[in-house]
Image (cartoon, rainbow, N blue to C red):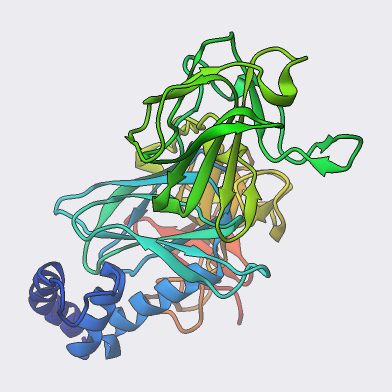
Length: 445
């Protein structure tokens, strides 16, 4: 009864809170806060964090930062979230300086749903998440540039009291445009850090080969900070990328096409590929370097390498989301991430039952009755619909909402009640009554 009252209270109060969140402007209380932080503060201001749903929503947000799964980009999966149960997901991925991640969450539901998307940078121990970027309150998409090579974490969380089916997609693109016309990263043949001059120095850039006279292009908007000649680089151009606090270096040019102080836009010609300087004995190519005012020379490859393109994982059938499945093999493993090399969280015997919460056609994201979430290969499970056996209850037994002794009792079944056993988990059986109602029975006397 209390949970029902809380649910009704949230339905009445939350729309006003959401309107307040979206109307916050510069100079107001939430000026520097993310939409997720604003929403959290609104719950607390209205003392809704003390309700069951409010408490669960906040706990879900924290848990997503701790129990995140590792995925490889590009990646996509689909799933379902219910209005009656707060929900959040965390995904870890490796980010290199120069990467740009594009994160998109498409939601289908009866009502519009605000989804909070936050990206965090983890420290060198992959702990202590520090928020790097957040999607705006009126969009379900976020593009974020990676400034340090670290593990990053993406948290996805919908607002309270909304249901929907979602598809998450994550892809990677380079931060900069490619600096040679008609070429891409497949034409790079010498990379950052390789030895030069018998090991006396290292290569502080990448070499992109192209015919003499091919336009060398501005890889970012910026200001030409230098045009000149030196012994190593020959004809060179320096382009200041002030947005990222770095300088782009173009060397071995046959000739320059800009002047110092000139403003350029992405794609403008700054010079033409050649082999001047110490490249006179090699084929024409552009030496492209990046120098940061903080760290010196950095690897340009992540800044310009080809993007991953859209994720192509086949999605799980929408009608199976939320269904119960059971292990069809002798045993199956729940893994931390959707791949066969991921750490094993749990090994389950045949007929173990649990619910599908999302995933792909190959790897199902599942939640075990004890709260463990992870991924299982789809070919190791089957729908928990066909009866394993029929049994008559020897004594009156409570039909539980979940495989937990503290779970709500749906009804008490009298002795002699016939049930179909659909699966098991620990000391509990997933059963279905003749009427079609399903629930869990304790096998403990």
